[in-house]
Every structure is written in structure tokens, then in C-alpha cells.
Length: 181
Image (cartoon, rainbow, N blue to C red; front, side, top):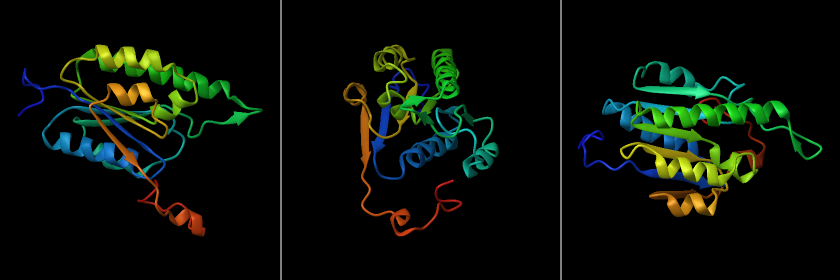
């Protein structure tokens, strides 16, 4: 079945939890979609300042898969407040996301780390819900990040909660190229 088939239903998918693999699971779905020549866009709300391996790999999948990093790398807190540059990056990423979702040009859009942004109250959940409810019918939307809002979970068609059982970081192992970035 082709996603562009009139009977196709675009799903709302959430990858959340404290374990690794949320973005990786979304990338796996994007890879699968790309294999079917479905146009996929990943918008990264927080990532942006580092050079991640997936940015190089996805260049080889163009024009079917594109990643747009729009964050500053981390959300920096000063005296309990979010840096104004981070707030602006989030606002820009959300405006860009809404435009791309409404465009009808994509079969799948991944809103990477948007759950963090919502849980930190930097983007109103009601605004996101409004966009989810009005998305093109055949568009798959994937939302990643810890602490998915219960209202997002309720509206979603598929929710996977990643649970950390063990992580090498706790034994002092630093982030590994090809694993964390």
C-alpha cells in the first residue's frame, strides 16, 4: 500500500521515556519510508550545534530524507530561566514545523525532541494538539523526547516508551561516535 493511497491514514507516533533510542527509532521509520520513496523531514528542536553522524548519512538519501537541525545543541538554563536564544530557536523551529506540516509536500515529518520543549513549557501543548488534529490526513507525524504530555499520548495512534535498564555512562564511559552522535 502506498501512503499516498486515498485510504492511507497518517499516524501520530510518539517515542518517549528515559531510555536511549527515541530519535533512533524515528530514524529507523524514516529509513523504512525512504526505501518506499516517501518524502521524510526531520526537524530537530534542540540539536543543532554538534555534528551528528546522521547528518552525513542522510545526505545520501536526498531527496527523500532531510534533517533540519534548528536548536542550539542544549537548552541552557541561567538562574532557572531559558536562554532567550534558545527560546527564539524553539519559536523558529515551531513556525517552520507548522509550515512544513501544512504544506502537503511530505509523507512523514519527525518533530525530534519536541516532547522536551513541551514538558519544559516552552511550547504550549494546546498549540501542538491543534496542529496534530489539523494535519493532512495521510501525513505521518512522529514526536520524540522524554516526558511526552499525557494529552499528546492520548491523541497518538502509537506510543512507545523507552525504559533505561542500563547505560554505559553510569560506569564512566563517554559518549561514543556512532552510538550517541
